[in-house]
Length: 521
Picture 1: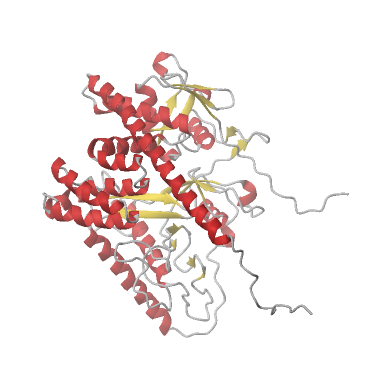
Picture 2: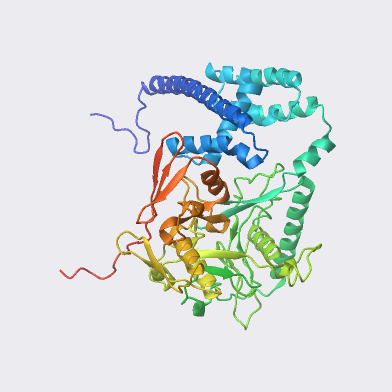
């Protein structure tokens, strides 16, 4: 009689598995070396292409900086069209390649031999670029390169930064002053209608802001903890009477904004923060950015659930985490507070800087607007947003445009409220939604109207000859040999100085919603 294995025993392991895994690991290593060699070749090709463009720049007689930059910008767009990339990304790759070959030649050689990977090369570039003296930088590179051949890119970056700090000939005071000049604000799109707001500030200011938000969030949480604990009905944060409008632009009145951000700490957590000591989000508390929700202060809705009870018979019960409260406070302060120093006057800015409100343009299909669909709303034609937020913003919009589309292609046919110039702008904003240059998604708010056939050459100011370009690409099209022609359906045909043709089609605007009714058969 054959004995049966116990029911919970694992199946016998394949004796060949270790050998197969070993072979796979060796193959991955060999392919990684091959990829590194290809990347080194790309670095050298990009650097050579940029050298030609820089030589063209040197021959430009104009003193206008913008005119002198055109050869590099045109080259970046040529490569972007050829590789389906964004020309700003390509221009950065060109610049990095040029810097690597000119200042870190040993690193490029090591990359070409497969001794390091591209991430190691990027770490060396980022941490060594602060060293201006050629001799100091060369010695630093040899030490860091030896470390890179046996360690991970993250460790190489930390080691390189520390070593560069110790050998840097310029004092910290001067370097901090230069770095402080790079401060600014940026937004990065995330999934599910979210965005990440980043602010580059001196470290003391940044940590001070985070500490103040934590303290304010803790005070709000402490107040909520002292309130009676009776169960209260959930609040939706949405005003059901405001869901019957469509809007293009919304002016935010004093409102409460909602979301999660990399500040504060989660409820019940002993962790001191959601950011580590380097300012990076920890795995336990991922960073998000502002989720915009328009309503009165009594209508706050947290990202992960109801936050404020609206039962008049019981005190408000705040169920937000400290991270969510911190994000809401940050948004409220940025959207409604008045700067401590306001250099404006009533002549230049009636009401001062505190009277300025944020403007956004939203596009929302009518089926989503009336609650029969759950897709399609977008911010500036760029970032998807949730339908609830779109309906809130539409309810408070100072003006609406009804956009009529072709039922098959989705091409914009007409926009309501026709009047010269203003109507053309409405039409083109609804049609284009963002910069029409290849690969660019700059929103309409940062774009300019361009005559595809130049007005000074007889091009008419007509819808069939107008399209939106961001300042960068408008300038490039005007100052270089790039040409643009518009076809009857609104699509654009780009012709580059090197003979490339690129067809930029309009995005379709028609979406099909499943019919809930059963088929009649």
